[in-house]
Each structure stands twice: as C-alpha cells, then as structure tokens.
Length: 192
Image (cartoon, rainbow, N blue to C red; front, side, top):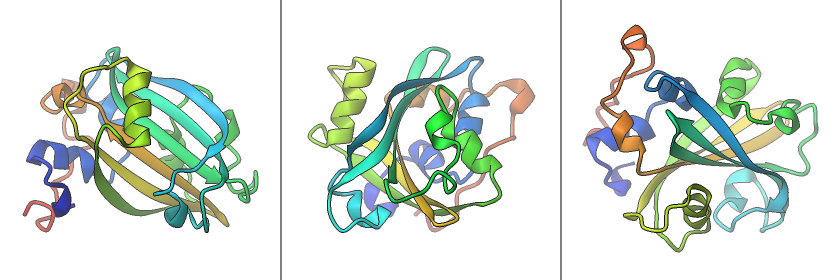
C-alpha cells in the first residue's frame, strides 16, 4: 500500500476490509448499482496470475458502476475463470443490478484474500473503461484502485474496484443514523 502513496483519506477507502457497498450506503441517501455488461470477455494481462490462469484467456466478466446519490463513485470489474462451476459461484450469473459485495460478505463459504493496490493511469484498459462508462473525458489521473481475490469451494473470483473522482465528496459525508457503523482505524503499518 505504501508504494501507492495515497492520501490518508484515500487510504481509508482503499484499506477498509468491510464491505465497500455497506460503507457507500452509510454515506449516501440513495445507493444504486448500474450493470454495464456481463458475459464472456478476455481477462487482462495483469489479472492472469492473480486468478490462476497461465495466460490471457476468456473468462466470465461483469462490470458495474456504483452510484451514491446519483454520482458515479466506483467502477467495478469482476472476472471468474470459465473452469469455475455454477456451484462455486451460484449467484454470479443472476446478480442483475444487485451488489456483488453484499452477496460475497453475506456468504459464510466465501474466503477473502489480501487486498492489492494500484494507481491506474489513463492508458490502463480498466481506467479507460471506467472513464468511458461514466462519461468523464477530463479526469485527473492516476485513479486509485484495489483488487481482491475471493474463493468459494473450488472457485476463484477477482474483483477490481476503481475509485472515481466523486468518491472524495463522500469521505466526510456520513448519515447520522449510521455513523460509526462501517469505519475502522487503519493499521499503523498502512499509515506510514
């Protein structure tokens, strides 16, 4: 994390191990998932090793934008190897406009791996997809991102979350009835 050189406010978003969906909901009156696409696609070069694939190949893919009070705050990209069975991830193909995070955090069979962090520049394929999805032509790069590998039975699922510029407006905003529900103090090692 220290190599990403994020501000304290950004680290609070990047490093929090609670459900990002729950945290976003605690800072908005209206939370919405906008599914952009779901189907087969080719995994990216930097995803292969993490998801256990020897090379770039076709995977099941889902891309969504998470909105808080109608502002796009997160672009999420999820891949599942075609070798994963329907029993490994029974809910994946039927999510529609529901949050994947709510499902993952609510399933006791799901194990969450370590978070990985990056700064994505405008030439990264996911940064380009994110900016195109939300209609931002002019953006200050880099964009902060994190990804995490989830395991359920024998299946793997990789989620990448890109934090869009509007996330900064949510940092200080907390609804009175939910204050303290989803915030954690960052470990000292991350605060360095």
